[in-house]
Image (cartoon, rainbow over all chains, first blue to last red; front, top):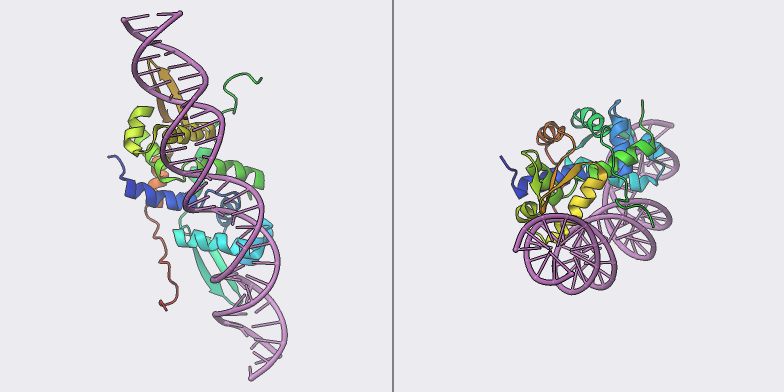
Length: 103
Length: 103
DNA sequence: ATACTATTTGGTTATTTTGCCAAATACCCA
DNA sequence: TGGGTATTTGGCAAAATAACCAAATAGTAT
C-alpha cells in the first residue's frame, strides 16, 4: 500500500522536527526523562531564544509535550519509539563523497 | 548515556535525508522493493534532475543503495527499520497552531 | 565508432531555515 | 503591587535548501 503524497508530507513534517543536530540532541536527552528549557539551553549551548524556538517547533509537530510546574516549563518526548529507530540508523554507513578517485 | 553533539549531528544528517515530502515518498515506495529512477520520477512528479538529486543525497546519507542493471539504476532501502518508525510517528497528534484563542 | 537512453551535474533563482538580539509575556513570591 | 525569573515572540541577516533548465556523462546497442 503506497503512501499518498499527503501522508508523506505529514510524516515528513514530523521527521523534520528531528532533523537538526540541536533538535535531535534535545530529543536524545529527553529519552532519559523530562528537562526544563534552561537545562536544555545548557545542553545545546545556544541562545535561549533559539532553543525555545526549536522546542516550540518540536511541540507543534507533536514530538514533544510540555508541562509547566513552578517557574519552569518541562518538556518530554511524546513517544518512545525514537531509541529503536536511532539504533537502526546507527548501523547505516554513509557513502563516501567521492565515487571516482580524487583529482 | 547522553549522546554527544557529534553523534547527534551524524544521526541528524541521516534523518534529514528522510525529512522531505518527496524523499519520504521515495523511501516509502522503496519499502515495497527497488525501483529505477524513471519510475521514481513518475511517482514524485518532479523534474528528473530534482529526483536524481534527492536520490543522490539519500544514498550519500546511507539511507539508500543503488545498483545499475542494463540501462537503469535501481535504488533500494539500506535498512528496513523505517516501517516501524513511521507507524509510531503516525500515532502522534500535531498540536494546534493557536494556543490562545484567535484575535 | 555513432546514436540513443538513463542518469547525473552545473548553475541560477526563489524560498525556507537558523540564530542572535531585543523586547514582550507569564507567572511566582515577597 | 512590584520585582524577579523563566520562557516566548518579533525582527532581521546569514546560511542552507529546493526546483528548474541546460548541458554533461556513462553505458548500451546498432
